[in-house]
Image 1 (cartoon, each protein chain N blue to C red):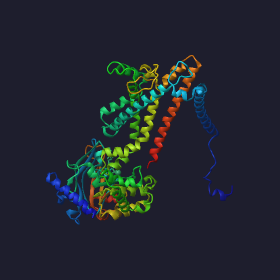
Image 2: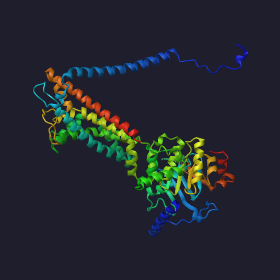
Image 3: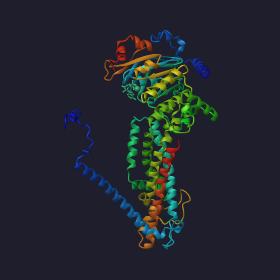
Image 4: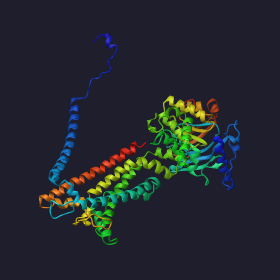
Length: 300
Length: 301
Ligand SMILES: Nc1ncnc2c1ncn2[C@@H]1O[C@H](COP(=O)(O)OP(=O)(O)O)[C@@H](O)[C@H]1O
Ligand SMILES: [Mg+2]
């Protein structure tokens, strides 16, 4: 090279110096991720597809309009739909109210350093991991029979699902409140706002997306839950919609269980169609969660 | 006019408190720091032997400060010397930190802020605060300014409109936002957001404005605008400002308090102390304490 060039050493080499092996590894890793995603999607599509194929013939108005019948062509799941809505809506509302109160108290009022608070926190987290059948047994012993003696009713199911969903809802509501930046609280306090004003006008509106998402996840879980309700009489033959907390009831997961176990293909079709209905309800719930989240984000 | 009104309310309160015998009268003449060129009547706030613990840790001690009407008081010193801690005592924001314990007294127009007669919410309404990082609420520009008046009373729509406009004008932001009051406060630039926070604080018509490093997150132009604004409003709203920027203190303030840290006899962590408090001119031109002199000449901190 000439001396002119060497006077100005080349420092900027913009060529890609990543080694070939490294690039190969990157590609391999990405390919692996794609493959796992694909496996999940294929599984889902196959499941929904076969269910659709099986239940397609019964996916009509008579399915949701009719009550159970010995004739598979007439058998419908209206009682189960109404039963599920009753149980899920009541337990959802009750647990949302209790969970919000608990979370607000624990996050905004209670002394975070106190031993009692820590004990309660550990307790709630443990409860969130308890298998649902345990809540069923508890409900059977203390709510359906024994102490309260409510029997196999909507009220019992609602209470048990409330107990089951509550810990998850409290944990997610607390997380949502924790995620509200403390600068927001400081800003409100610094203008003379009281604790309640700060919570109601600043903290809660900011936490609503998180609380809504968490609550609807909890409610979805309740909607698909079958184990505790098997113990609580939901597997019974019910041919009318619930009219109140004291009514008999059945729910979608359990009619699905019943019909898919039947020997006759036509009954199995009813079960498959019921699965599609349950899936649609779950999708609808999640859509609501997304809408609430977007709405509250845009509202200012 | 506005000033008159708030004074009337204050003197009513003071009179009421005096009747109930709860006002601790402060002997201002014992305040060796107060500058000679101001009469006692100019005092609006005063701390007496103020000290703050976080748990067992003594963060800052023996702070005797006097805040004068119509002035900007700057608190300077190396980081960790307790400037934020002190300024947060002046409107009881430290109440929100469970471990914080405040000792000594802070007087506001002769009323002990930590006394039984002082309500924290009312204290914070009278003594406004602007924070280091602009913290507008996730609401519209309009609702940000209206928040304070709304939590402190039930203003009508017309009153709120008027207050919002007046506060935004006072904070030199009106011209920039008057056509988009309904837009999110987050659509503003950092400097505009900070002026919005000032407007928000002014909307409840405080008697004192506390600012904790209000420009540290802003660029030089936005900083200059805030400094101009401070000079403009200081006659109506005395300002206490924490700043890590000595030039800023020299530029805007009338009085400067220099804090430093020292490790106490049987302490492991340094405690903040007020080294020197004087007019800004004296602090920067001929400080009496060598530590002050070292700090302002850049040989320390
Ligand atoms: N919430 C808190 N809990 C415990 N210690 C704190 C807290 N806030 C500040 N401190 C401590 O108090 C001292 C003074 O802090 P601060 O007032 O923030 O100083 P400055 O604003 O001058 O930088 C520091 O040692 C800091 O670590
Ligand atoms: Mg600070």
